[in-house]
Length: 356
Length: 233
Ligand code: SF4
Ligand code: SF4
Image (cartoon, rainbow over all chains, first blue to last red; front, side, top):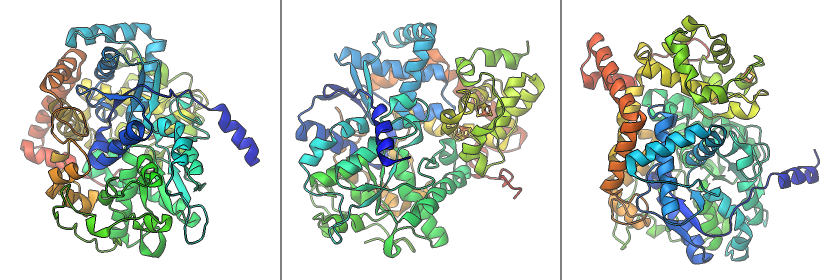
């Protein structure tokens, strides 16, 4: 297919994303592994773009990881989700923004189910009322946090301090984008670009000066598989799937990876380390891995935020190759310091994975 | 009608997940689990569609239903808009609620999932809670995680979290009244009962296997018989 034709198809898959006034719910996995990404998201929306985005202190996990590990029944998960909607309703919001793809897929699934089975919705209303006394409206709009950054991508580009461009060659950085299965594989119409041409991250990459890398296993799962990672005995499944992606992308020599999902950056970052330690194999340049980022981290780099404020020091796969290529200013000596400059020591150095 | 068929019929996901499967195998072709394990979602759809109570019971007692990663890649591609991954969710619920899950190595792992993710949700309000993720159980989380574990509060403070704090923010302490609400939701909607069943059946199995609670947990969390691969290992 001609490129112009593909672009036209993408245009057909646009979803409506509100401009402002969001009720924000967090991601369990991201809060554990990439806490600064959510901090950056709110910083960009509130301080950079002046948006109203509200976080309710009583919101909790959506229970999605438990649901997809099959220890939590659907009825329970639907009622936990209904409680989150009740908090949104009580706070006077209609636009629901979530920071997690597992949640996003789950919300999409539940909203569809309620549409097709109104009696289920009624039962959930009764259960929630009985358990908590709360009532709820369903959100008018459901957005994943990346949808919102996608929507604001040109505004972010207009404030860019750095671009996704290799300062040594002047060429666009070659970026692998990983969408996360539950973003649009279940309900293609809910994601920007659908399941065929997901554009949510590709749109950011292009707007910020990079070039998206196409490769055979671009849509393959990162390998999370819920129980296939969470139970130690099953982790071979997880690393094998990640390895399949890396083997497929490596010949295309990507400079970096941008991810959508809570689990994907973790798996793509950490399994590279494990593969290096187990097999001595690395996928990036000069014996390094391919640096992996969340979309907020990339947006933050483009906006010129300090890499250590973005939390790039808690990646296992070294990020410095990209900082150097982009020309981002950073102080290596501050990498592992605490908030008030206290010395927190230094992580141990792996045997094979190269770190700075 | 048999008890399994009755159970399956009552799950709305059956209606959404399986209509007139044509056995084309597209789901199997796209499935990451089918590549790694001795697993074939097309066969799952076939057995469920057959409504053969004995065959379905065998499935519920087997490792097979626990191989899927619930990635839902199959959903996008099925020409009949079926969702084998969703069928798996229904079968797994049935296997636990009807007491078959302890018959298989992979099924027994539900105890580990209940005692980690399941318990963290009601105790902390998060699926994953960092003080519980030890480097010993998660060496793959890397040496950076080891360092983070050693300086958990300071690292979160540096990164702008509100770890275990009052008010909004990353990893804030979920207020007790919210945890109480979660608990009541769990009680009313079946999660508490499923947890109880997982514990009870696992305890029985542990006795059968002559293992203490601790030994049984360790076994289900870590042991892999190596008999699950696509090619016999
Ligand atoms: S892709 Fe759909 S129709 Fe084809 S075998 Fe799988 S479930 Fe059946
Ligand atoms: S949801 Fe399960 S059956 Fe479907 S593609 Fe993913 S691993 Fe395979």
